[in-house]
Image 1 (cartoon, rainbow, N blue to C red):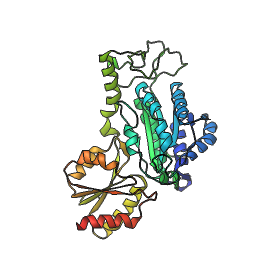
Image 2 (cartoon, rainbow, N blue to C red):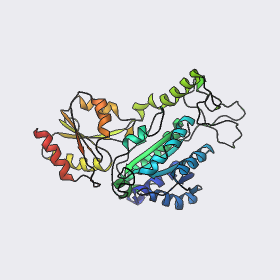
Image 3 (spheres, rainbow, N blue to C red):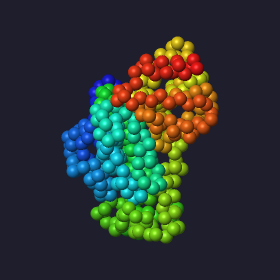
Image 4 (cartoon, rainbow, N blue to C red):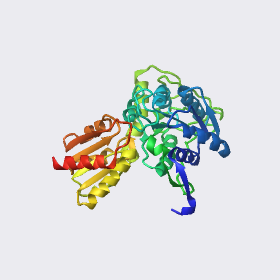
Amino acid sequence: MAEKNKVLLQGNEACVWGAIRAGMKFYAGYPITPSSEIAEVASVLLPKHGGKFIQMEDEIAGIACAIGGSIAGLKSMTATSGPGFSLKQENLGYACIAEIPLVVVNIMRMGPSTGLPTSPAQGDLMQAKWGTHGDHPVICYYPTSVKEMYDYTIKAFNMAEKYRTPVQVMTDEVIAHMREGVDIEETVEIIDREKPEPGKPYFPFNYTDGAEIVPLAAFGSGFRFHITGLAHDKTGFPSNKPAVNDEMIRHIFNKVEKRKDEIAQSVEYFTQDAEVLLVACGCVARTSHYVVKQMRAQGIKVGLLVPKTIWPFPEKALKALSSKVKKIIVPELNMGQLIHEIERIVKNDCELILFENVTGEIFKTEEIYDKVMAVIKQ
């Protein structure tokens, strides 16, 4: 990476730069700690890049407005934290059933409720998957650096456009507020939604004809169609026919689930001969990586798996490692959420140990080091 291309950015700033690079033209939201810089930076940069920024009266209106921007044909994003993410859930479900491309960013803080607004936590991992009602797939990226905030925001837009679905970017306060060098001029792949051909009949949900991802026309572009939060047929108009609903739900679910091994991403460190494996995300992964390097220098066979997608979880990568290691330690800034998905995948392959932290502070290096040593000596 050429030094001349590097820009010192905060994680939240990098998110906005990534969104603009991906083609974002509309942002709607409401400020909330610790995500507020995303809205602030977007309000300054977006108009300079041909886009529109609007601050709504609350988080519910923010995502509703962003959905409207996407339906009008603009790549759209909204961002929030803890309580605001809860408020967005109903409209997030609307975007799922209506198959609206959208990026939703959640900068986690400690809860429940108002909790500690300026403190890091990882309490929204399960809410990202199960927060809305009904069956739907979830794509959720978890960056662990400022550079990844930039990269995965771009990727989130690409996946939203490619699969006609809302995509989440979720990280903790530490990653959002730290500053690192980012190359914002490098070549990146940009995916735009497929649009229908003019002059031909258009059905926005025409998967009944075998199409997995149906082209999406913009309102006002000459195509007449209907969008609803109700169960619907290929025209978009409501239907209560059992076969139609069955086909709709399976389509929404399978367009991501069938590709989950392709979408799921993770990074491994020192796992070739590891006997003990750490699985960690975000700022905890950064501390764990330092500890693993330190222990490897001492000849201790410890490895690290860092999921980059929380949903879909990198199941194959974890399963391959769980069959080789003796123990897996899961350090989390919560009372245990990630470990539930790990338990589902690992089953009885090896011993699982949760290392929780709900102090409102990040793990200290020595805390993770001492925990791993205690587990090894058991």
